[in-house]
Image (tube, rainbow, N blue to C red; front, side, top):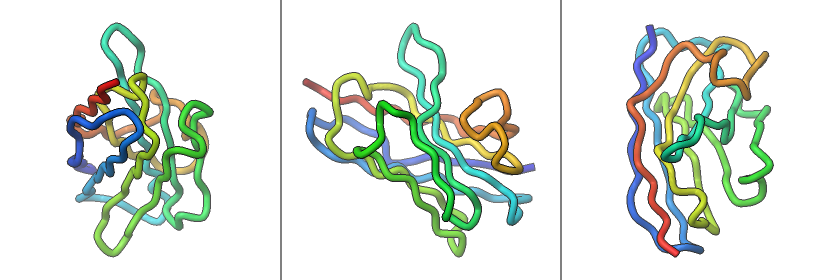
Length: 124
């Protein structure tokens, strides 16, 4: 079992920045991949970014590429999502998730563990 707790959400103006954190506890291993997903009202959950255990491999959705950065601190068992140049369409509940292995890292159905989510609201 892996427990995930997100923090750092809030209200920010368009063009601003926000950093989300996800603390992991439990059975994390060197194959644990961490991902961020988001879900806006009335929409399906969508992939945002993912990172390998080593941090050398990262994936991004096209909609956030160049604006968001995912990174992790394994000593703290924490993964971060640095969000910049935020847009109103980035407004959503952001979820942290964990899975074993990189295969299917962009697919929410491949993830085994999820956090409770944190709300990000971008005002235009």
